[in-house]
Amino acid sequence: MNGNTPYAGLPGETGAGQRAAADLQDLSSTQKRRLSRDVSRIAARTREFLPSEYIVDADISSGHTGPQVTVAVQPPVGHTVSAGFTPDFEEAAEELITADERDEVARGLAASAALQVKQAISNNVTPTAK
Image 1 (tube, one colour):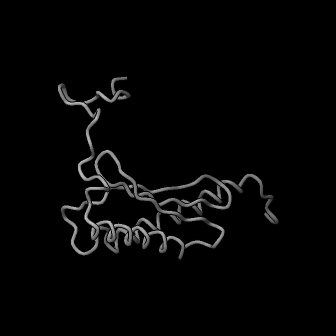
Image 2: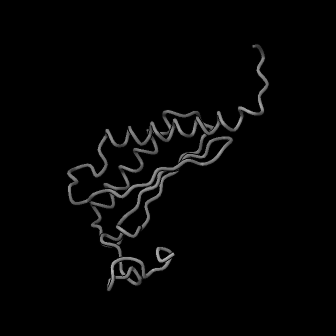
């Protein structure tokens, strides 16, 4: 149960009151712009894989270890699916999130959202033929 408190962790070290390593306010305007651009690209790529009935949204927030990126898809029926990760600013070149990573996340989200629809309607649809 110790993991549920803000004092969990190594003796003498607590998470209480500590700031994230790279908070959103600590990013330069260039880093913020690049991160926003890359996240928008993931959302746009995800939209390309899905019909317009699916709602795709992206968000950048401050996490415990730095900026946290979340891309979510709300299918027409079924549960929302999302992918969240923390970009690595230390190793970043021009793109914080590479094209391969963006495609992988977009494909995974689209596939998961389609599966949610299939699972939601599978019990409610009577087969037309056997």
